[in-house]
Amino acid sequence: MDIGETSNNDTILYLHSISPAGRLLPSASRWNSIEMDFNLFPQSRNNLGYNSLPSRFSKSVDFKLTVTNKKNFKRFIYASLAVVSLIVVLCLLLHFLPNKQRHHGATKDLTLALKQALVFFDAQKSGVLPKDNTVKFRGDSGLDDGNKSLVGGFYDSGNNIKFSFPTAYTITLLSWSVIEYHPKYEEIGELDHIKSIIKWGSDYLLKLFIRPNESSPGSATLFSQVH
Image (cartoon, rainbow, N blue to C red; front, side, top):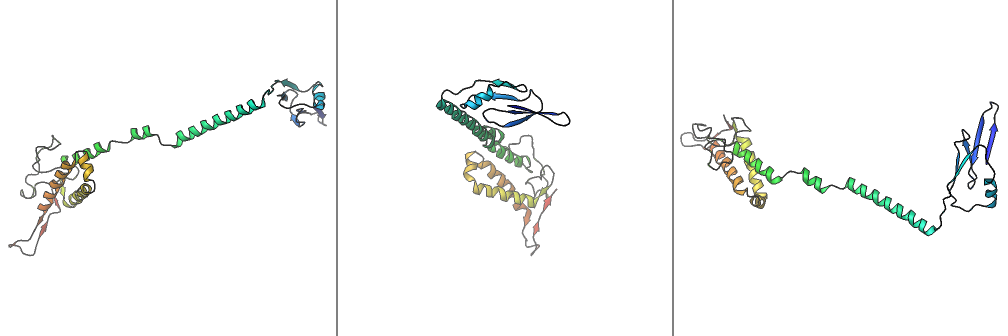
């Protein structure tokens, strides 16, 4: 049913009603209100009478969509909802759950990292280097330190200075790591390597402390750094 109303300003307001619902819908023009009848519900005789009247201001499209089997229609609706829900759940799982392949690809080889860390100590060794030293380009150095009494130890990260307290702290931590993770070092084949590094630093630390002797009773000497 279409109703045309004329105001004082000669403005026409078009109203269009859908037959089964019986509601009035405002329309700005005579062609933008489209009646869509899916024939999903049975129509009464009164509605059939209204639909039979021609409309001057509305353009109606009848798709003639009917549901022949309500059970199959309900099954289709439930199946569609289930598929959509499953897709949403899978998307959420892929987004929030960690990706194992990406995680393994991003992580580093901890065994390789540990071996490279131990090579750092081999590169910082001072004194007469052992023949099995892993850093082949390094040679003997600091052979006159302390008039040959303080030969050995480690340089401080590339500097030609040997600091006593950082060396003691480092050797202590390496020793505790062997105590805590002795089987792990043995499993990766680095137990003898790290023990040799600890012994190299410990032998140097023993040289830094000079006990009092008969010539100077009551006094001791502790070297804090050598450069």
